[in-house]
Length: 396
Image (cartoon, rainbow, N blue to C red; front, top):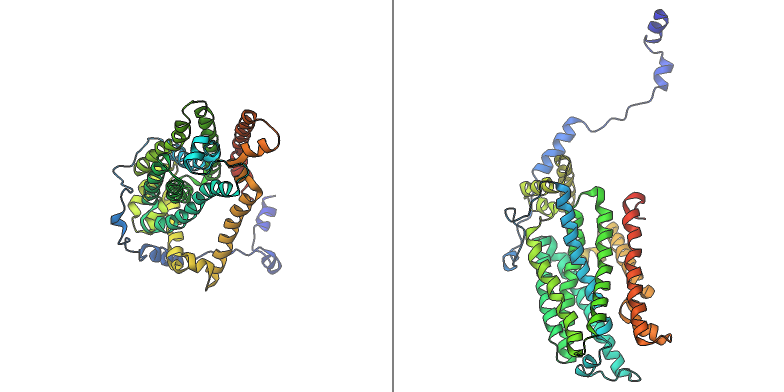
């Protein structure tokens, strides 16, 4: 038996050698050392020269810390959810303001029924907000890359704060429209940056679920705005019934604008600016496992981004000149058109004008308000399906 084993363990024949699976050669140690040297010697960009004119920002000494990293990223995503809830609140806040007779008379758009000019004006007041949000998102996307996610959120908060004050104090339609546009710029900036920031700071293992929770809170903001207005309209003072919900935006935006300064900056952005130790500190505060492997991965991504930085601009995305920019353009188009098609199904109309739709269907006013409110609640709970499935079964 031992002899047989010895024979089997002997040198292989030529046919056996030919049939044996070949080992795939990995990168040599010299190549790995060369790659690591290139990463360590990256030429990082200089800080943006206008950054000093923007208030707020990340400070390692000011950043809140917890003993358990899980607690840290839960708090981060709770804060991010609050910011997204503010966007939802702003989306839904006009649904019953539009029905307030004092508001209609003050804005010069009464009566609504049977008057095309007033109907168009009412819709215009709602719509200009979204124009402002588009502008704010485009501005904030650029600012977030230049001066960091935290400062970009503070920038958006200041605009939203000013816009909320104007809306709550509006005395005519021009005043209200200005407030809506300015608030839209701020909310668009916040809503553009916050999901990116929370995804980059959070652990990758639960990133999908946390993003789903944030957008569940977005619908929660719509629900909150609706029911606040429902009970506010029970107040006999009809002026306060529409000004109070608009003024409550100030609570959200104040918490967001001040609170973000106590949270960590994106480790990816810190690494991109050459602030490696700060990036390591953020990862240690938000990760349970060893952070060096992830830090090395971020370095590789940053290296690639810096090499292709010419393609990371809006014009280059629309009019690509190289292969990378062309690939990026189609990704951007896919993301943008998914959002556009989502709105074209009519969900925005239902969010703002649900009461009118139910009344047109023959329901009386108070029942229409209740149906619209419960519709918003069901809308919020439907998002919970994504919370459960996103990380388990994938995004597609």
